[in-house]
Amino acid sequence: MTDRQIDRIIEMAWEDRTTFDAIQFQFGLKEQEVIDLMRREMKPSSFRMWRKRVQGRATKHQAKRPFDKGRFKCTRQRNISNNKVSKR
Image (tube, rainbow, N blue to C red; front, side, top):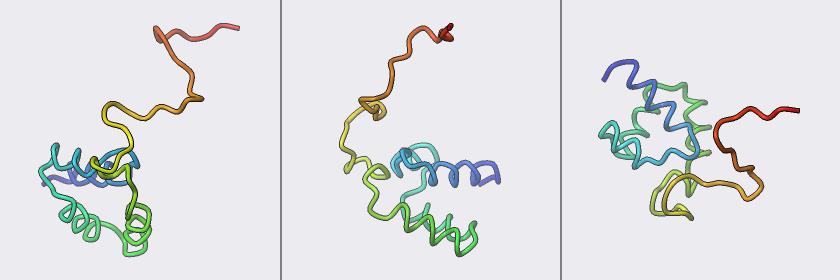
């Protein structure tokens, strides 16, 4: 793997909404392989912080997500249409 690919995997692993399934689809790494890569590439304290954050998080596992498709959208989030900048 190139340094760029490793950086992207680490970035995706830190993102809350990116599942391990998405990382496996894009890079071919299973969850345990991602964990091993993170352990190898990060400082021990950063790895522990990441593991604590990811462990048990439903959004990191496709099967545990409360929604099926697309991305989660909060009910308080505004609808944006036509990419127009609002004028005052």
